[in-house]
Length: 315
Image 1 (cartoon, rainbow, N blue to C red):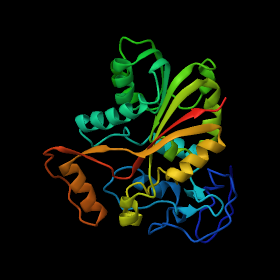
Image 2: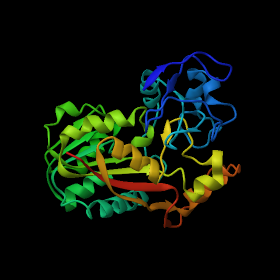
Image 3: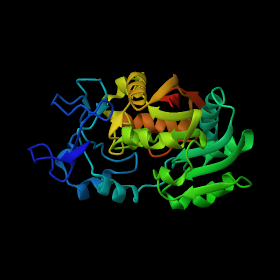
Image 4: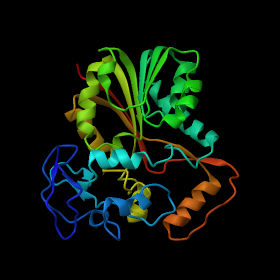
């Protein structure tokens, strides 16, 4: 899916040119759907390190284009895997900045959707569990036999171990070496805000299929680029960022999963709990007003641009 690109006036030869991650159609050239000023593809990797993490930074990202074949929104020019490995080592944990109670309530909503499609038994696999909120709910309320957790951020491993204490578990410091898991073993697989980050999501979806038991439930949480919030904020929408080589909507995530050998059972908007102060601060920044702190009085459940998808493998 990736190949070296030739230098152009608008892109650096240090980056990779990508085909569509959903249908694999080669980039045919089109007007960018959304771009930043300056363009990330016109800057070097060292210059982009300062824009890699932290919401209160100048907005810089690779240009997003719409695939002319399937409608997927993705960055035709993007970091190489080696560059991403270096950049992710600089990043704090996925949920930094939100109070723990808000995070717990948000992931409890994911769990409530999951249990409508799963008996919550067998083995559980999560890729990128971070601090383990969803894994903890599954450990406490399910009857799983074993937990398999892939989390490259080793600073959260101690907390992750605490969340699943008392259950047989294995935590791997990598992300996608599914060969370490026995075949047909996993009854539930969860990826919360992982597919948005993958340079080649189709390959990952195909590689994980052998681990899945028949009728396994697979849960994905992703941003929704067709949401009202994204249409209102356009280039200021937080999901347009250096960490996301593609963004999905209900149609394109369904196309990706179906073409990778899955049946989509459910795609729906998901609730996120946001403290009022946190929400107002970030919305103000998106509108160009720099507010560094506001008091957090209480949290609201809002559907602000995320979707949850449940699928199962076609064996």
